[in-house]
Length: 556
Ligand code: SF4
Ligand code: SF4
Image 1 (cartoon, rainbow, N blue to C red):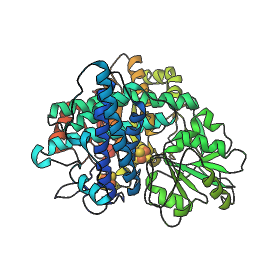
Image 2 (cartoon, helix red, strand yellow; image 1 turned 45 degrees about the vertical axis):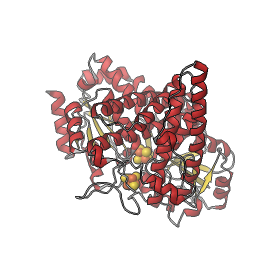
Image 3 (cartoon, rainbow, N blue to C red; image 1 turned 30 degrees about the horizontal axis):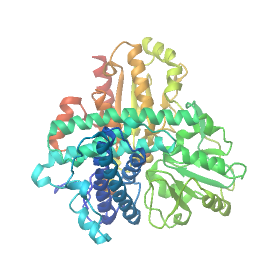
Image 4 (cartoon, rainbow, N blue to C red; image 1 turned 90 degrees about the vertical axis):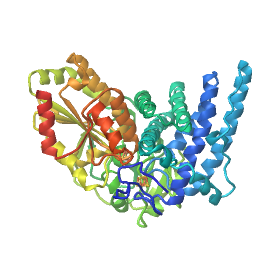
């Protein structure tokens, strides 16, 4: 196996990347290699689907399979090798269908169809796992590095990992019933581009930024899906201490799963708690109307082994980020959607009856804990609803600066930086946050500035669109560019959704982003030089020094 797609990859003087029998996330070599082969197979579908779509015969069902398939390969999503073998079979059949559809479309148009005589378009799945693994060895992310060099492989990886994030977000939107031809076309184009084994650095960088633009559309669609289904987020206090009664814990990002579970547990006496990135669910009017959506439990994804072991009920993992289920809760954790772990029960089609049965059989919380709450729900509507007040506060000097401290959390010790940064930010500054990184500081009392809370939780990483809309609206109000606002972005990355959001920020021309806790291993020194030159990306340093530098830069 060779994988360097996430922040916790192995770093070593001999080269970075997880390359032994098991990655640091727990992904074994077989699963990792089968994931590489699945990416190869998905490229084959896209090669034909893209061409058919160009002839007016788009196939969104195949497009949705691309989104789902890509999502299964993100960090901490699916660890089940058997699932990948079955997805490979499905991919091969869909690729054959896509070829037939393309050739028929070309015939109907009276144009010659292109013959794609090698690579993913022609791949045939081997008959057994050993054969599939032999095929996978030829198509890993570092394939051809001796010929094309580390810079090309690194930029291909940036495109691939950004695209994985794009697909994950688009899958979330599709799960709520929202999709778009334009997004399917963009995904197919990007996979087709990767299938062509590009070697030009400029072209690869251009494709990476094009993906950033595509991701903006995807995030807009996801925002429309979330708000269309569940209403606009509203500022809402969320209980973070349990109440007496039977209980189910829901983690991940899929609001549709949560909604279906809330409906199925209505009037059963079972309370539903959110975990990790599900926290923002409490701010959506349709979801918070369920009285048994009782509160939020635990911390960010990396705390799950302790949180889940302590929780006295079953757990549903709806998307990233799952880590190895421990014996203390292995029998009471369930997966849904793209998630998988060998031996863990997987629930299909929003049928949560097994989960509900498990909740009835488990003790739940025996008593109420002392009530504690935190405030969530500052999506774009809530923030822009008080835009006049915010703008006046900036003009009067009451708000000196905004820090957007967002992204993924993780277990690396350097992540204390984000806690220090938020807590040490001066009292006349406002902290905007999104993603699970917020668990580092969201129970800290930040106070307010003239009634505007100093900590504004904008939601999941899936809600990055909100932050972009707020930044654009502020820039418009102050008649300047986003880079001229008193705003600094301090981004914490862990996996490929964050890579997609980063590409979006770069595509929008946003400069001087602080990125940490470490820089991506797939970016070679040369590539980092390009990002520093073009976009002013900087690694995180000392929290206080970085705060001072941000304030001075804006004051200059
Ligand atoms: S996902 Fe991250 S930790 Fe897991 S194998 Fe890949 S680089 Fe290593
Ligand atoms: S923000 Fe990133 S690290 Fe956190 S749960 Fe979501 S996908 Fe995982």
